Length: 400
Image (cartoon, rainbow, N blue to C red):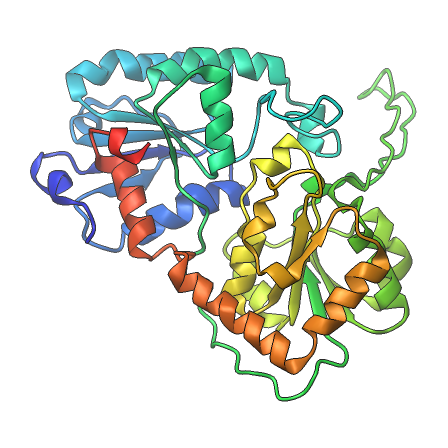
C-alpha cells in the first residue's frame, strides 16, 4: 500500500526536484520516477524543475525539495536560502546522489579512491573542493538518499551523518516492457552478446593539439586507458569475435581496444535515455556483459546493468572482486560471476557451459524471477513506497 495519506490531507502536494544534468543518472534516479508518479494518484506531484524557484505560492504547497548532487558553491548558497525559508513553509529537504564524488578512505592504499583516473569526470572534478562543499551542504538536509548500501556506509564514515537512506536503482516496466522470451530448445551455437556501458568506464586516446588562438598552450593529449575493461573479459571478446564464435553488439561508444574488431561487430551509437531501453531490447541479445575493476568508485555503484539484463531476458555476466565481496555484481547468478583475476580460458569455459540449453533456460528464468522477487521494477510496491517516503515522510529514522 502506497504511503500517501499525509500527502493527501496536509495541504501540501508538490515535490520540487532539481536534477543535476540530463544524463542517464538523472533519469534512472529521478526523471523516470517523477514521470510515473505524475500519472497516478498519490497526493504528491513531483515536478522536475528547469530553474530554481522561490515563488511563495509554490513553496506554500511544497512538501519536499530534492536536490540532485548540489556540490558547487552556487548550489550551497541556493540550498542555504531554501533552508532559511524552511521554518516558514515546512518542506523537507533531500540530498540525492548516485555515484561516489569524494574519497571514502575505506579501501586499501594501493587502490584508486574517489573518481578513478580512467573516468573523464576525474579530469574536471576537484574532489577536495567537493568534499568541503558537502561538509557545508549535508547538515542542511533532512534526508540523504543514495543508490547503494556501500555508498551509504561511505557517507556515514566520511561525514558522520546518520540520516542516509538507500533507494536502489530500478528500471521502469513502462519502458522495459517486452515480451518474455521462451525457453530455447537447442544449445546456443553463436550467441548474441551485448555491451551497453557508458564511456566513463575507460578513456579513448585523445591526440595532442598544437597551440592555437583558442588554446594558446596547446593540448598535450591523453593516453588511452582500458580502465574497467582491464580484465580478461576484454580479451575474451576480441578472441571470440575474431574466431567468429559470437555476434557482438557494442552500444554507446566504441572503445579503442575494440578498434581492431570494429568491422566484425555491430555498433550502435549513443542513444538518449528515452530510446535506450527499446534499442537494447530490440537486439534480442542472449548475454549482456560488464567488466569492472576493484576500486571504491565501483564498490559504490549499483548493479543496474544486471537489472536491465534481467528485464530483457539476457543472461548477465559480470565481474566479482578476488580481494573482497564488495562488487555490485555479487547479487547476480553464481554461475555467471567471473573473478577479476581470471584468464580468457577460464571465462571461455564458464561461458560455453552457460550456452547449454538447460543451464541457459535455468538462469534466464531465475533472472526473470528476480525482477519481481528482488523488486527490480520501478512500479514495485517496495520502490514506490521508498520513493514516496523520500518525498513525503517527516520522520526519516524508520528508513535508516
